[in-house]
Image (cartoon, rainbow, N blue to C red; front, side, top):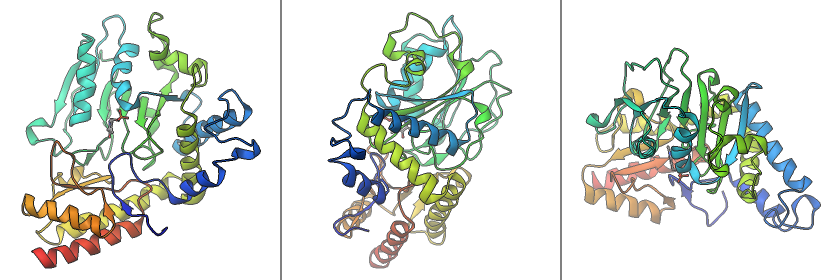
Amino acid sequence: MHKNRIYNFNAGPAALPETVLEEIRESFLNFDGSGMSITEISHRSKWFDDVINDAVARTKRLLKLDEHFHVLFIQGGASMQFCMIPMNFLADGKSADYVDTGTWSSKAIHEARLQDKPIQVIASSKEENYSCIPENLQFNADARYVHLTSNNTIKGTQWADFPDTGGIPLVSDMSSDIMSRPLDTDKFGFIYAGAQKNIGPAGICMAIIRDDMLENIPDNLPSMLKYTTYTAKNSMYNTPPCFSIYTVQLVLKWLEETIGGLDKMEAINQEKSDILYNFFDSGDFYRGTAKLSDRSKMNVTFRLPDEELEKTFVALAMEEGLGGLKGHRSVGGCRASIYNATTLSAVKALVDFMKTFERQNG
Ligand SMILES: *Cc1c(COP(=O)(O)O)cnc(C)c1O
């Protein structure tokens, strides 16, 4: 690790692979022999075409997407998708099922309701303070899609497996766990992810859409809010955030060539999260907040015996070069976000710090 850099446990924007940052630095003044920076070249140039096409190709290879899927880049973050999804997929009074597992699902539900779409919340873990994933889901047979948040960044829960919907396409917000594990993509009609958690900087949302989801999109939607605009123009109807897409491309290259794909990535993520959860479970000073079977491998949420100690813990950790451990402002407590780019050594350094802190304050 470079000196002056910290172990970064931020929830988002979050850590990027250090080698990717170095590659950006190397190429920043003169991209690919162009004599220009990636932030200065035309998005209509061959240079940028190569970047976006490579990002798309790598996404397809990593997720083993078949020819029915399109990979798009859309601005407005994951939050823009909360409104675009019902706008595009729920024409003609069609309904959809939503599963409520926390803040981000609730926002997706809110945006669909703002448009008066007849959606149904078929399950919620609100009563359990969102500490788990609902079980035994019952789907409405006429639902156009089932929306769920694959990983709940704030509460630290994650779908370990995806439900069998009987053929209704799953639509999933994967902002905080995309590319962290292999996916059985057959079940999905639409996947989206704000890049700033696991695959790049803020400024871009990756969207993966299956052919059949493009049917019946209303013609009269605003061009920028219509998926067919993006499929028709390779995500370049207007000027895309070239720098963000370039960084995503480099992260995907790192995933393929340095890590060796999503099976490998999943094994590393499993090891990292096991280290933390096994440590919590070996004592009673640190207490995980999520139900055991639904624990997230990306966002590890935990409490200390009291709030004063939590404050001291976060502050002292920062002094030791371990940043971003404060829980989301809406829930308090502590959270270590251990996305793909957070290294095993970062996690080991965190556990060492936690042991020392416990000895001194337990
Ligand atoms: C961070 C996050 C969002 C919001 O992403 P923006 O790009 O800021 O809109 C949505 N969903 C999940 C699961 C997130 O983690």
